[in-house]
Image (cartoon, rainbow, N blue to C red):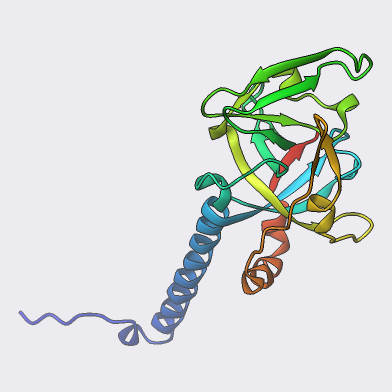
Length: 216
């Protein structure tokens, strides 16, 4: 008995249609794999909402790019704005200013209404101290203590869009934020412009599936 392999061409027009469909499905699969790897290991969109980072970040929903490279390699530093998984509610992401690293001695005002009452803490190993820029409306390390470094998810480095159309990244780094009598200034993270162009062109559907961080 003779047998003959049946290829797409042997199936006529239906076979060509099936081949084209499989090729498109394969290309689409590669695209979504690329998006998954990018979102998991490199860069993701983050939408913030809430009052705790005023005036640096608006009260209204604002979109940022958050990078994961610095967090994975331990390169975040004091003054960075980071997205952290809430130690009080693991389902919730919060955006705060990184104020102290492990072994730092942090002196802080636990109650903004009583500025003369200060407390001092040494940040434990493997932990960081986070605070909101708006001390009067921020639930942060002053309430729940230092948080494990592993809870840091992203480091914000680019304001993509807010309702006023502002995309200025300098507000994240050049604004003078005063913590414990120390004035913080930081140069922006230099992300390759070619990658910025690529991520800016990602579809609206991808943007809508971005992380949501609350400024509480």
